[in-house]
Image (cartoon, rainbow, N blue to C red; front, side, top):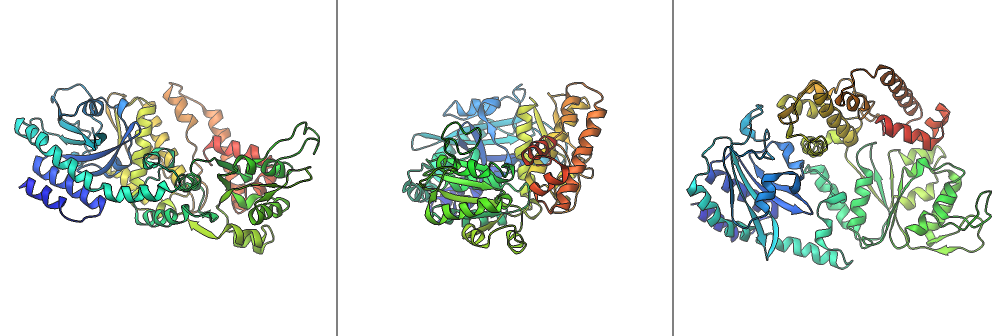
Length: 514
């Protein structure tokens, strides 16, 4: 019966993810288990591609094989691996199986097998159950017998991937280089899928892209994704934070300077444009550039030509521009703060990035990603969200978007440890640990919660950090008020506070506002 279902899917034309999801559903039903998960090996980590029976947030986790003994044992063998119910090895899914209904129960029966396609390790299949004895000898023999069919189903998904690889090969990019890593966008919501489809088309062009979105949505990550999927992938990606450039040095930073151009210029120095020659230049917070520099930037975009400060001759550069802003540049043009011609040159392809509150279950998937990072960083056996905490995350407006979510999860994990939780237990984050009310703000504003130096101190056994906490709270409030008054213009907020713009950015990052 199961053979018929698996074989029927092999001869049916199905989208990749549909085929893989049907595969794990069939396995889940046949083995009567709590969870069936298909994981793809990407570098040193296993990424869940399709799953039945796992908490939603588990799909955002990236399991570093070396940090999970059971996964390491499965990946070390070609034959199926079964673990005794009394095995002392922690299971990566402890506390994450849907059947647990909010209870922090450990997995009691587990088996899995590494999967190989065309002689190379592709990933793994894991089957987990809460009841000991679920996987008897017959079940283990079945897994051995079905492994070849499972691998055949995975092989059927290769056509789509090979077509994509052929398209990328025009620029010398290997598909394996794009899997996971720093360019990965985590999320499965309709807005994110639609955005990535658009960006995949424009990535292979030479068009400038203007990334638009609120603070904390991940504009830098999307810029990196565009570069990794472009024909310039093997050349540099140079990041410039325009808001952190002092006006007096902005021209030199971007275009370089000649010896003697100004006091202290003792040697010739190339700028960021020359550093990015042949690659991509990412102009973050481009709306903060001084008008005097905007004119020279326009010339570089129009003619591919720059001139070092104090030099006589121009230089040719081959640079693709990706810009980002959380400001409304049309309003800046209207108010005379941004050149209209530069705006039209940069916004050939505007790409609005959806805020986190519009991404549905991506909130839980991203939370799972940050939970796994904190599990490894804090040497925890397992850490997860309670159902009530999941509801709280979904209901919150996320004014600070993904960056705020990361800080909330990190702070909650540290707070739980500071209250005496054991690292060897299955830990559960409840809504009060997330402290969302305390960090609530209006939609579109900066988060006012820090990534928790206070909790890190508590986690190391310090009971009081009252003075520092009060000072940082005052600093946080002052910066937030200044940003609101300046309509999120960091340079203007710095002037109001009497700070250098670069120092304001450093302070904001330390306080968790940026």
